[in-house]
Length: 244
Image 1 (spheres, rainbow, N blue to C red):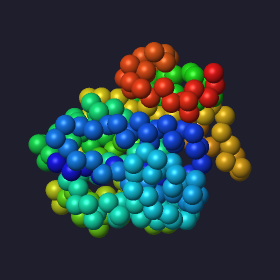
Image 2 (tube, helix red, strand yellow):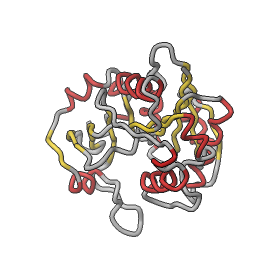
Image 3 (cartoon, rainbow, N blue to C red):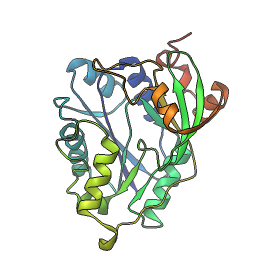
């Protein structure tokens, strides 16, 4: 089994360094893992990616759809059996990756992802457990069959935000259920989404901030100790302990 993991870098350097370094340790048994990152900040992005063992490519940050498509297309040459998409400020553990691969390979499902997980506020240490109304976008995994149907371009090139929705729309357009598309959520394993409580992108509230997402999901207070057990070694990285 061969898995390609792709991510995109922009800002949040310490968080990205910690998350990519952790993901470099996620190696399911009997699986060859290829990791690729696309960045837009030259030597800074390259150092973070290559320092964690990722293949690196440089592209403009905008539009985001074209940037993400550049790294998904780049994964094609490695001929993976499955492709996993994850944000550069998110991590999943090996239990999830192993279970998701089993769904893709043994059950011949085209698309899986995790419906619940943890969110960690990098600025305060606050941790919550959230349950998405549908699914959590980061950590989603796709079959090679689906990637080929989309010509390895999983997003609309011109997309600038709501990238999960952009991907979903492209799947519906190019690979509908009537064509054999299959989806199944994965209930095994954990995802951690690292956010900042107060984040502003220069023209209003960032809809992906910790504060905003917490308002839009079903969630429960959790604690850092639970998360540390789910992701052993992650919080040894100084980039995850900014608030202390």
